[in-house]
Image (tube, rainbow, N blue to C red; front, side, top):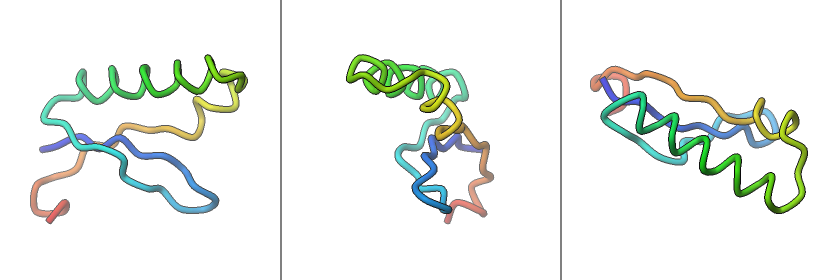
Length: 61
């Protein structure tokens, strides 16, 4: 299983990155959110637009 970092763009979820472990994916999301917050976005608005999704290898291909 791989873990995808996804971002909601309008009504679709876009895959930004893929990781072998959930912890790596969550760390990546935290880093991306902190960059948005540093640029002045509100934390609550940015958090809901990211997700980490576990995907089987067959589904990812």
